[in-house]
Length: 239
Image (cartoon, rainbow, N blue to C red; front, side, top):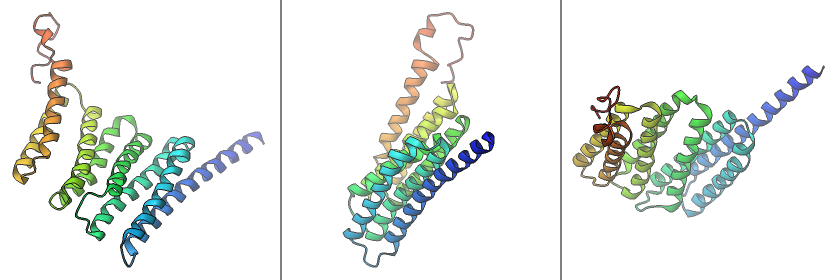
């Protein structure tokens, strides 16, 4: 009887937690639907949706992440993070904003943070890097689409993508391969910056280059190795 009661209590706890995940997902979807279906997309609608999503954010941070099990908190964070990302994008598309919008930028940054939390909460340690790469993809795509019209907004999204990809490299690679990945990323960003004539991308390229150099000289092939005997002195040569 005690075992049955414990099992029943566990089932009720699980149902309660999934209920909170469903509430977050449903309210997030409702806010987005209101944003899309609004007949006259104006400041009042945007403010109402932003307020609703802010309340949901408070719920997710103060209750879901703090009290729910890791995986369910991750699903809740993912649902709200996706809604915030879409709300930011939809706001610019429907309202045709031609300047940096503080609310949209806040939604984008919080969406990135919630997405990163969801990756850690939902995935095994050995695949978290792939999760971060997947997280970076929509931010990079949106930045590419908005780069000509909304440079500042696109820059924020690009920064999130660059940070996520850089962190993914750290999780997935080490040694010479990590240096190579950062260097290749720097080269790709520099090439895109040149072809698109968008010099802001060079900042990300320089950041990746700096990481590659610091890691190569500080960890993989430190200059002191030139003066100290080692079993495999050529380990860091490729870097």
